[in-house]
Image (cartoon, rainbow, N blue to C red; front, side, top):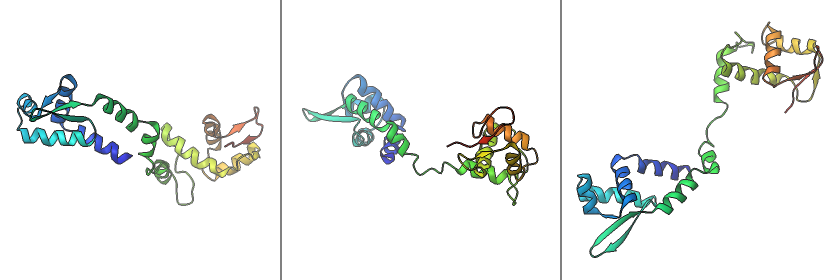
Length: 185
């Protein structure tokens, strides 16, 4: 369906086609009338109408020896609803690597041994680092503060900041007063 979305936008990416759609939204016109209104050659208008017709935006009916074109408003509405459905928009990004940003940040902020060069100050980068660090903890297992600090010390000497940020980002939970820490799904 993403090919349909691209084709739809390619057709609409031409200023003259948008003008034709605008004119046809007001009134049906023949090729010659549109050409005169837009100051274009009839063959150019025919070309644009052909493109618009292929994506289902305009239709033609015979009137004498002219073809009269009109905007198919119902098709436009259905096409828009279909193309912009949540399902189709999600499918259009199916081949995007959602973890690419995290990998780049981790690569930028870690040394070869896996430890952090620094704790990022920018929120988005910090979140990426925290998503990486939290993987060192098993889901559902409870850890004492001492165990958490031991694990975090492999990443950075400021274990208190990392621990606080993991809890603040809700990647780790804890019982109050220095109690246990754990990671949930």
